[in-house]
Image (cartoon, rainbow, N blue to C red; front, top):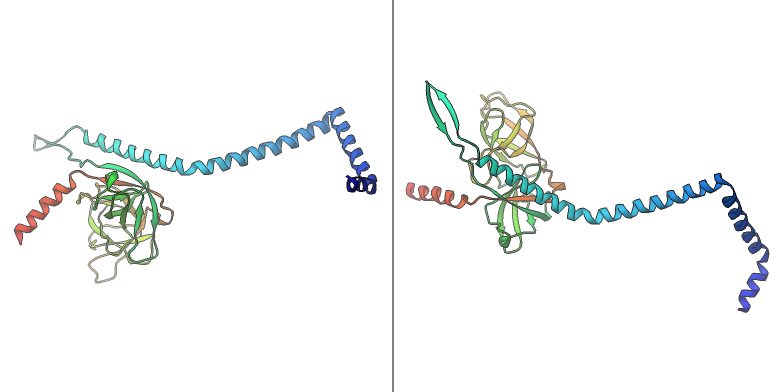
Length: 283
């Protein structure tokens, strides 16, 4: 208490000055509309800025949940599209004045949304780890896609997690088509550039141009036909070569990959069993 009194006495002039300043400020703002509105405007701006900051922070913490919901919604929409394709009416083609009826035979895929919890992009044998496994219906050999395009194939799985071998793995070769003409090839990764793969076995007699879309062929049960792999951004044909050198810019950016859908095809096992039985007989 004694120290406080000494402080007030020693700084009485400064304290009196500050008190008078506060009184003067209150009198000005309470009696004149312009200063009052200026003060209110400034305070409103501060409050609005604070509220915006608080809202941004809240939105950030909700972003993960929003992304998971969006990924699940993408999976549901893919499922609806697949179901609609499976319900297409038979079509009729007229040839030589006779009618032939063909039924679209679409494979039934079910999508399982998942999150990427670990991945590599700078190795020759890259991998992705998903936060879902066998308990969620994921099995080895299932295809994995993003909202942009192809990701890879499930290589290993346990109860809770799945390990995916992506298209940017030197051992991954996916059957592909050039969308505009349907000609076949397969993808091959050079082990260096995670944004590109090569399209192999495309003969010189086939038309290939910059900007051509490369899609899945549908010749394996892993992926349905027509899923985007990427776009041609380099075409080269040396004199005497029988095949093009084609570089494809991948539609999936693995550096930003967070959410995926795993494709479950109930017919895949029986199809592989049929192929294996034929292979055994040929041996």
